[in-house]
Image (cartoon, rainbow, N blue to C red):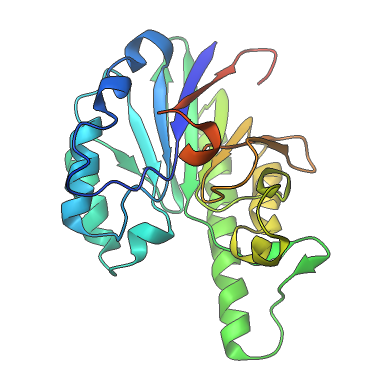
Length: 243
């Protein structure tokens, strides 16, 4: 059985040092890995990323992350990524990582993702160049996610996890205003997860959403935004039957 700890939208900044560290230090007893589903900082500065790095450095489990929209705010996402990588965090964007966990090989494919909406109520690549660019960006994120999942499966992954910041389904947005659904996720991400045959999908971003959802293809989706799970992390079990 694989025990997956996950949280997103922790929004750390100077002054928050030590906020999550005591809880994270217990991970060795209850989880095999920790996933961070974006919005790790408040404004996407390297100094804020250093605070995040201090919370997760040297943990007893591997840490895998994607960035969120807040982590892009200062146009220093590359520097944010470097600070996290120095602390041993695998920061994904359009790629994946393969981890050996006991007798299993856990593949995690990640992308921030983007918006656009969901089937029947979504943006399309039509009209103004700005609209086409919006949707094409989301499509590139989704295509890279599907490709990474496929590569991980070919590399021998026995369990596949898709990690994003934006949501792949409307299910986990329940509680958010309907008007902002197109800015919280895209069905293209769900299609990529189904195509890549993921066993679990984890995202954040929707602070007022719902924890549990599912793609049309049957992939379990979990919204782990901290305001939703209301704790330092949630733990999900993936066993032979579930996978």
